[in-house]
Image (cartoon, helix red, strand yellow):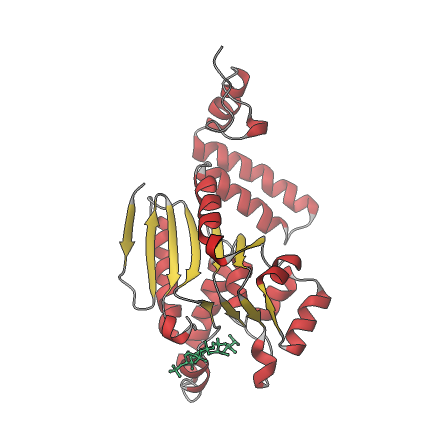
Length: 281
Ligand code: ACO
């Protein structure tokens, strides 16, 4: 398995583990709070990895004991207070990569919440396709505790993912909760003991990385855009998307995917080619 590190950014590192890119928010001394520089770096990282042919799946996590302590309250809210143009530039960038770029990213994205997760970090978790958390991690919508509320794209992320009762309870009390609870309320797919988190998440990432990348992109886009469409529009869209997939793959879903099943090589109901190969008689 090939491993390599990209360290051209000040606040983010990228490690390639086979075809999985592990993107690490890297300000552990500030609990990986999202500073203006981190938004600049993450925007660039996502742009580079979008076209990087070596990586097929992204895992986003935090360095040290914290996943992300939300927005950098000092560098963003206080130090840019009297600089509205710069505040606006960073605000737009912060919203763009977390809410839009990640959500419609062409490659599968998995959030690995290894520790503290507060406020604006919820948008990263929500916009990723899948999310897993350490059982021991502490999460919270802390905004109300400093006399604010889940602004920016956080409110919309909550509305997208959580039940109204959970969203408003967490936003109005600012109470913390643990990884187990995050899984119970559907904020993440599952919680694992911290010691197992990386192994479990990387296994899922590698499993997904074996699938056809064009089919994965169609899978994401079919689902995500259908959320915003009427049933009629969605069915028209997915029919066109199937034609796009056929063109991108040069029809291999039919010739290899279905063809190999029909010639008895594997059982797609039980897995991909490797997992579900039929024993040769
Ligand atoms: N913004 C700026 N700096 C931060 C942030 C943040 N969100 N979170 C932590 N830091 C800094 C601290 O100021 C401190 O810096 P210093 O060493 O220069 O004094 C350093 O990170 C370590 O923080 P501690 O509080 O000492 O670490 P501890 O492990 O005891 O607590 C915790 C961690 C719980 C995350 C705490 O720092 C905290 O409550 N942070 C704020 C969380 C928050 O409310 N985030 C904003 C959400 S709202 C939004 O994102 C819009």
